[in-house]
Amino acid sequence: MSTENIGNSDDTMRGTDLNHPITILEESTSPVVEPESVSSSEFAEPEVVSSSESDDDNEYVYNIKRRLTHGKIWSVEEVREYLDSPFTEKESKRLSRWKSRKLTRNVAGRDKQLNVPDTSLASLLRIPPSSTPILEEKQYYVDDSVINAFFDLLKKRQEKFPDWYKRNSSLPTWTMTFLLSGKWTMTKLLSCINIEEIAGTAKLFIPLCLENHWILICVDMEKLEFLWLDSLNSPPDAHHTEKTTILEWLEKHLLPVLGYRNSQQLKLMQLNIPYQTNRIDCGIFVMKYADCLAHCDHFPFTQQDMPHFRLRVFLDIYRGRLPVPPSHVRFLRALYNI
Image (cartoon, rainbow, N blue to C red):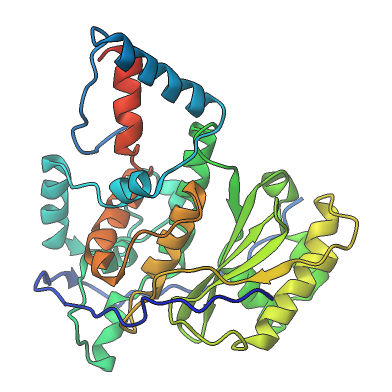
C-alpha cells in the first residue's frame, strides 16, 4: 500500500450564521429498500471572446478546441473556478423560497427519477454552526437518497460531455452495506449489479456509510488502484476488515466479469485530500471528492467551502443536472461567437 502523510487536518471551521428555519411535518428517514436482481444552464456570467479578435486569440481558441475534443485536461484553477462558481440571481431566489417552504416528504426536483424526498433535500439548506451539539447533528446529515442522486448526476454529465470527463459509474449506497453486514453473499451482490452500465468505466465510485460516517471508495480501472477517501483522516490500518472484504469482492467477483481476468490485485492507495473539521459534513466531502475525481486528481477545496457546497448540491439535485464549468462556457461562446 502506498501511503502519504497529508495536511489539512489543522484547518479550522470558522462557522457561519446562515441558519434558516425549515418546517418539517415529519422527521426525515431514509429506509434501505432491498432491490430486485438486475439482468443547460445556470452559471456565472462568463467572459465572451469575440471572433473578431486577433490571430493570436483565434489560435488560442483553436488550441482549446483541439484539446477538448481529444480529451480535456483539467487544471487545478479550472476545477477551483467550477467549485466556487457564484450563484446567479435566479438560483439565489430559489434558495430563499425553499428555506421557508413547508415540507411534505414528497419527491422534490425536476427529475423525479432521482427520487429524493423534499425532507432529505432540505438537509442541504441547513448550514451547521462551527460548534454543533451532538443531539442536533442529525438534522444536517445527508442521507442515501441525496448521495445516490448526486452520483447519478455525475454519470449523466459525463454522458453528455464525453470528451470533457472520463467515463465514470457508481454503485448504489446499499451495495457495500449489504455485503459488509453479511445480508448478501458476494455472489448474490454481483447478480444485482448491472454489468453493462459499468463496463468500460474509467472510475468506479462506491459511496459507503460506516457507523454513520460516509466514505468514498474509487476504483481506478485504468491504473488498477483502490482509493479509500476518508474525510476524518483515519489511520491507514483503520477499517482493515471492511477494506479486505470489499477488495476480495472486487478482485474475485466484479473485475473478472468486467474483463480483468489476470487476477491482478488492486493497489490500495491514499491520496492527498482535504479533511473535515466537524462531525457533520462527511457526505458533502464524499460528493465533492467524486466531483473532483471526475475532473482530475486535484481536490482544491477545504472545510470552509462546505456551506457553499451544500447549497450548490441542493440546486444540482433540484434541477437534475450539474452546471457547465465557467471555463467551458467561455470556450463554447468563443467557438460559436455568442
